[in-house]
Amino acid sequence: MIPLSRILRMNETIIITRQVQRALSSQTDGEVRIAQILREKFPQAASLKVVDISGGCGAMYEIHIESDEFKGKRTVQQHQLVNQALKDEIQAMHGLRIFTDVPRK
Image (cartoon, rainbow, N blue to C red; front, side):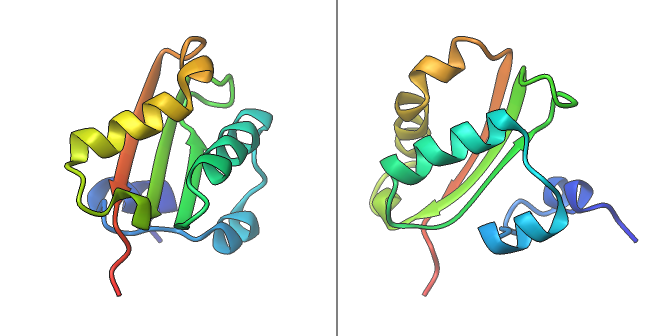
C-alpha cells in the first residue's frame, strides 16, 4: 500500500476532505491553528488539508485548499490570498507548500 502522503506528491489533484483526514490521523496544534485560520478566511472552502511536513516541529507545512473564492484568479493570486491569511504564522515557518484549486462541479 502506498502511504497517503506519497499519493499526494504523485498526483496533486487528489484532495482529502476534513472528515477523511480526521479518520486517518490526529492533527498537531499547528495544523489545527492554520486550518482554523484558513476556514475563517475561506468559508466557502469545499476541502482543506493542512499537514505538518517538518516531522511535527511546525517548521514546514503543506496546504491543499479548494474554494470558490479562487474562481477567476490565477494560481499566483490564489497563493497570495493564502499567504496573506497566514502572514503572522508564516514568520515562524521555514517553508510552506500551497496547492489551491476551484472545486469542480
